[in-house]
Image (cartoon, rainbow, N blue to C red; front, side, top):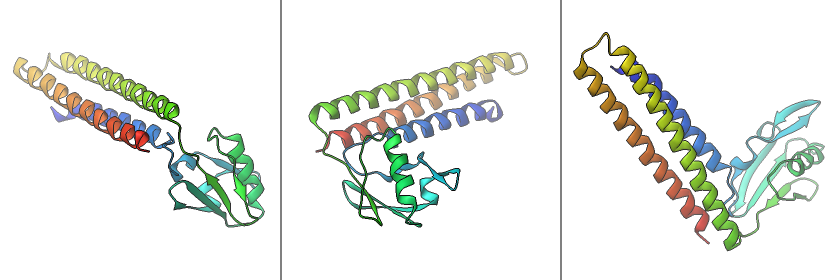
Length: 182
């Protein structure tokens, strides 16, 4: 039984991980160093992750501080930040780059919370599609196992789906609360 449902649970976990990653990239008016996770900097001709060329810290609630290990990297890091979709202009004092996040307006908060709900709904659809695939696999396996086992596995697949949908709702509610908190 487990060997049939296990790959589907793995897929559902990947869907949850993807949703959390997408939520981490949504700005909530607070400085979140994860916004810079996908940022690549030209380091001696090689695209390199920002974390590999600089120290990133959050000294205040709305400021990210980037301290390059090599001072000549400041221009490259600023160029990468300006080319990204972060939407924040970096400022530097020759040694440290600061990203200051402005307070979110009420309209922007509402737009972001709509985006959170949309991403949650997409994740729920993905989970339900995985359940459908699991049920198809269970039905195909139904030739070798008893009808009771098929029913039990379908029930287990539904319980697993319900558990993940509930988790999506909780994560979405937490992110919406974070966004709407002034």
